[in-house]
Image (cartoon, rainbow, N blue to C red):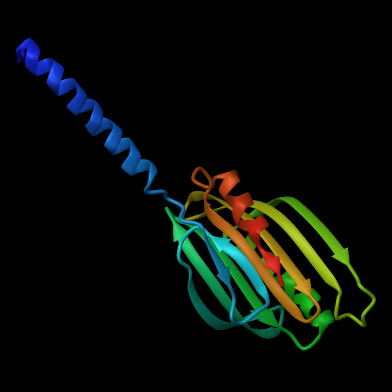
Length: 186
């Protein structure tokens, strides 16, 4: 349908304004709504890409029954989570953090493609001893390719698991880096 020339001139700005508004609304509705999170159960802070929910449950980590508190959120099938727990002493925490890493990789029937371990000791009878393991693993869940990125930390008698896991094609490196690097022990 052809419009009279005067009507076309008036419609063009209206169409442009509608498109601009649509673009602005889309830009103002981010998929990731980053927010600071401070745990009430453990001394850490992190930035979550959405409002996390919290749950506590007892898990078996290579024969050690550990009460883990997890804060997590899911965005488009990708889970962002931090779990923390306390063990009787530093040696038990060191063993538990390795068991956490192994369990997470098994959850996706995965294979570790990158594994970096760092150990630091303050010489304070184990109280300042810290081990940090950064991994990337590829696997599958329900026949769909999955990607796991995680940081597993043992500091003194406390353990922490900071993970991003989701469908391989949907996990964005920049988002993973933002989440994991925002994790700070207080």
